[in-house]
Length: 111
View 1 (cartoon, rainbow, N blue to C red):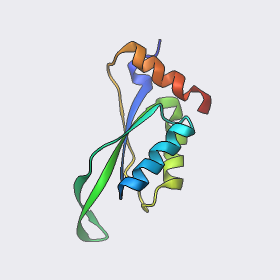
View 2: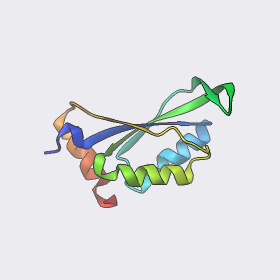
View 3: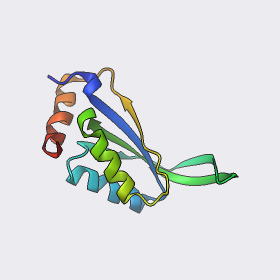
View 4: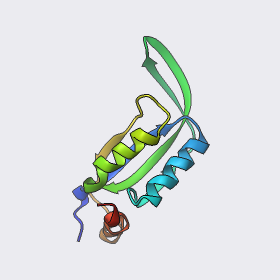
């Protein structure tokens, strides 16, 4: 059985829906993620190059394992159009054991 801390949720914002779908599909095809939710657009406000920026972005909620994180991060950096992509991982502290096992099984071939 997979322990919850072996599973990660990775967040990544994309500039548009087409990019979000392309990245989500690529991560699942490469078995770096078991599932990627493409969420509704959000408004992001941030500092970039000494300016206050405002952008509409499409968030991805990526389910993966700690063992796959480095490969997933590298893949996203290579394929993401941003100079510095937002890639933030948080551990899962609880979850349905069968679902957590499925995440591990669905991503096992990428290790």
